[in-house]
Amino acid sequence: MAMKKCKECGTDVSSKADSCPKCGARLKAKPMGCGSLLGVIILGIIILTAFGSIFDGNGQSSSTSPSSVTSAAASSSATSNQSADAESVSPSQTASTVSNWSYTNSKDSMSGKGKKTAAVVSQNSLHLSFPYNGSNHGYLRVRQHPQYGLDVIVSVDKGQILCDVYTCKLKIRFDRGAVKSFTMLPAADHSSTVVFAKYPEWAIKRLTRADEVSIQVPMYQEGNQVLKFKVEKPLVWPPK
Image (cartoon, rainbow, N blue to C red; front, side, top):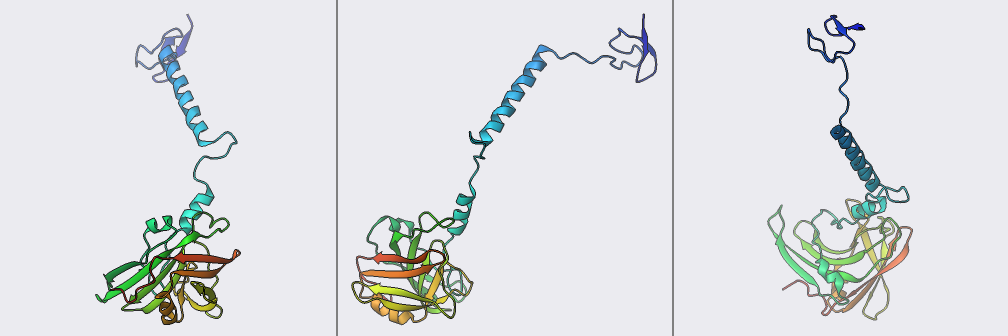
């Protein structure tokens, strides 16, 4: 009978023994039973299924594409010239071809004084290339702020409005009147989606008489884009 030494205690043990009679150490590996083998097969199938769901038939990852991530990041709301508290327009307004001016009265959190805002959303959506493609409306706001004074604000959901302190002119048309130059100022926080009228009183005077307003906005690498605003009633300013 062949003998071999136990690896744990060094005792001579028969080569046919399953375990050492002295220390009890196992001398032979326990064979895999049918149940264990079946478990390994099932685990392998689960791993292969999970791996296949990550990739589509063309070997491309099925996770969110870079374009959707970039577009979502670019769709943040426009900020104001001095602060990020410019009121937004209700998304429901974008669904109709004719909008109403939306008026809000609130208090400035710093001074406690009242601020007033009127806003309207464009009828149309800009057609820009990636990464600014998709729904992209324009917004026209009039704001009286206790800290920043009177503003007329033009903004878009995403993209880059070409505007600097030296050359920043838009074209604007009220109803069927002549096209006018509209001098604007860039945002103090360097936001590329919002610009401010240099002479807000001039614009407000005409907005209080107009049912339709067209604003031509120069967009980076996209040329001149036209935002169209149509309202049931002209602007009422100051709000009642």
